[in-house]
Image (tube, helix red, strand yellow):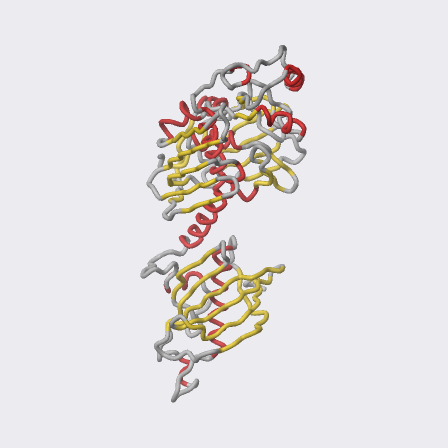
Length: 467
């Protein structure tokens, strides 16, 4: 895998028809600067509209992956993205003269050929990889989908499909070396569908640009002559198609014995490109589809964003800390004697929770007066420690709050159950429970030795430092 970012050497175009919309479309790939990623630009609009190729911009998954922003869409992007990811091109500006790339032959190979013709060049900046260092899983029991990412030092994908259909059967495939295998073994694999799906898709307003040259049609039922006539009219064929004897309409030869499984892997490669960064992981996928691919990509992207945020300040964390005191001093605006967190041990963006520690010692300045003969940590400072913990959750999940401050707005249902004394380790467990405009709602528990010593709900506002 390449160490530096890559783009193409020159602009290159390809013209054809969109699979589902039927619109004539020209796609033009342009070189892009380091850190650009992939972005789609609709040049058919008066104002050229730019849509980042990131999973948060996915708006529809009807037989393909659609990206959208402000009611502007680009349909069926997975084959384009698979070609870029498969060739390990990091940065590319993708212009479209319509709302869907041309389907050509239903594979990624036409895109791969023009990109290779354009030439691939290394850029000055190093490539950023997201290394999956913990097992990550997506399950959908209803559809029998199981996708898991396992730690490894490379990028590998294994796919199994099983449609319980004798014409297709159970198939599997694996890609273990992107550089050696992608172009010859996976880019040529064409999209496929079942004959029973054709009429349904057509009535849904899909496959308007589909032909028997753009997809493998699997015959999964007895077919009558009247249906053959309908297919002839639907696809504007010069003659009647034939059911054939191979299980493929018109007996079209497959490019690979397991071409459908290889195309499913190709789709997954394109969908996972929406994570926004090349990954190092072994992906094992049973019965994947676009919907499951995208849900899985969201999980991986959330992990990536979480670790990317933390890595900005990671200096010297030890003993299981995600952020130690040196990291906190880079993040928090508080200083002695009011920084009431020593260590952060967990931030979970899915559960919207954060856990932090405060080691309470006899040297805390407030013990001089609260109380000299029986030192007890003031309850208001325990609440403040929980509030500072909540502030760290916002810092981790929002794009950039370096120019912001978090102010208390309200506290309610505060309860103090046990005194906190020197020698205690205070554990703050805080959950963000809601948001309204720039106000954030939290629920917090403070624990010592596993027992709750204080709890409360509080509300905080994010404001500019200069306000």
